[in-house]
Image (tube, rainbow, N blue to C red; front, side):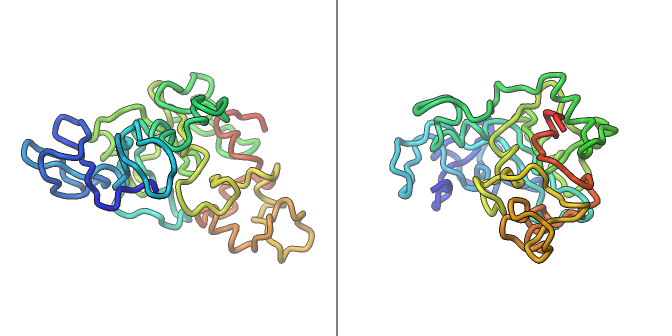
Length: 262
């Protein structure tokens, strides 16, 4: 319901998105994708539907927002036991999500669950929290190495030269600046989450780790609200195979990456 199976949407040389015009020469989703030119376009990010798109699985109005500006490294969905995989989210992700979830941006149906979108820039306090936060009780981080793929953010730009230079499997680790903003995917995954509500981490418990290790149903002293019916191996996979040592002994919710309330 999110992706256009025919891949008609394309990014043109002037940065605009359309369904017609110059032919699509290649995918535009990757750091190695070619740039569009005067006679060649590139595909939009992940073949997502754009303005006017009607999904066969969603009984709603045609989309009103085009796909976001974003770039993935060529290698993605990798184990993160050695470093983070960084998708460079530029701008427009939350607005695109609102094609089907308008209430989450304060549209029809109610208020916001959490502010998100191009206009929701990181305050100086939130950026400082993000950049200093390493784990519960550890605020010794710095802006040059603070990026965490468990809590990604948008850079606030559609400059594809910058986005392509940022999309890496460990080489770019800088945290947010004044132009950065929170987006839906800061807290949620689009696919394959291991947790309720497609969250990036377990929102149903105060602690993500138990006594310095991932919880699991095979560990009899771990409360069920923490293990959530998963084995320790499943929990490890849900956290991108990161070693538990990257977190605190009793790591609390990753909401604290921005809010530092733990």
